[in-house]
Length: 214
Length: 214
DNA sequence: TGGTCATATGACCTTACAGTCATATTATAG
DNA sequence: CTATAATATGACTGTAAGGTCATATGACCA
Image (cartoon, rainbow over all chains, first blue to last red; front, side, top):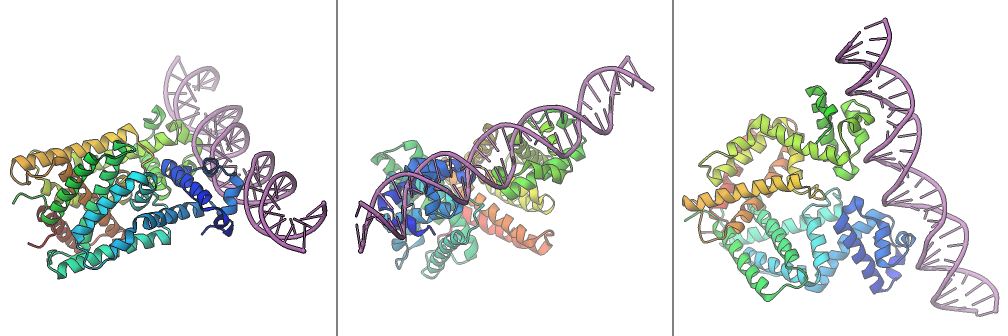
């Protein structure tokens, strides 16, 4: 957690610092990520960074936290998630669409967070991060159990394997969406959006009925 | 490519060096991976490492190459792959089983290579590595096209999406197998093997027919 | 205006390592 | 047995970057 000094800054300045950090870590990873650069991009002195954060690791971990909080605040990500009666396929649909929308105006933050989840910064088996992952895993598991009891998911396969199956597809598909977004560039047109929506639906069809010919 | 001096060493010594390197990079990643440590583990002087390799990056890249070659040599991985009439589901089955078997006696090498493929060392968008990935992607695509024409794979979904679907599951499942292997420890018993075989089959069932209730 | 406290700053310190090099050792040749 | 080339070695160098600190700046109060 950052020092008090950091929270005494204006919201604007804090945001500038965090965005600079996210950008640097995204580009160069944790080890090569340079605190001096971050300071420069944010328009503060390097020494100041150490008035705000204990060390580079704390800065990194707070970058993750800040990003998550930003996305939650802006898009209510986890509020929609905790609704009752969420079908796992609807969840997949919503989640994919969310990411696509978020990529429009929060490209860097979304890419950063996805990389964190995809294990690019795996040297941090930090508890807080492990906790986030576990939380997400457990949510999926719950959806699976619900799906089994309401008859939308087959019952003959172990929950753990179903979860593996779903998250595997999910991760890969997100990766793909992000690559597409990168190619599409800054502004994503409606045509891209329609295309992408079709692909999400095709993916759900595969999740439901598999790739084997019937 | 290492210098001539390296190839003048005995096979044993070369192996010792490469295994030391793989172990170090696996444990600490590329940036934190220490050439001095590698030298010490391999029982040579640090200076010698620079008689063998131009720099750390070359050492790393050759570690990848060496690992691949070892696995191919020991298990004919890519020879079985290029057989005619390979069904994509059989391929998945064989591939998963291969990894499990290989984990028994080449744990470190397999884990290293998997991490490379899973993008843990993603700062290396090296051509040679990108090439490996592309090769593997294209093989999958070919299997999908074959599957479509011989009627084992549904035709109403785009190849690219099918490939995404399959590799997503595949990656995640491999990750899972490796985690299990780590837990099982040094020696994997027959019971583990049977359990794992059941799980592979369940996964293939999901790939074929999906997770939706029928 | 002067005093006190919080914050900003960048020169400086420290450390860790990648990479070098002069020298020692060993192998090969004549 | 000597000369020469190839290789091994580890002390040394250079440098990048994380982290510190004495000092400057500015805000707030009396």
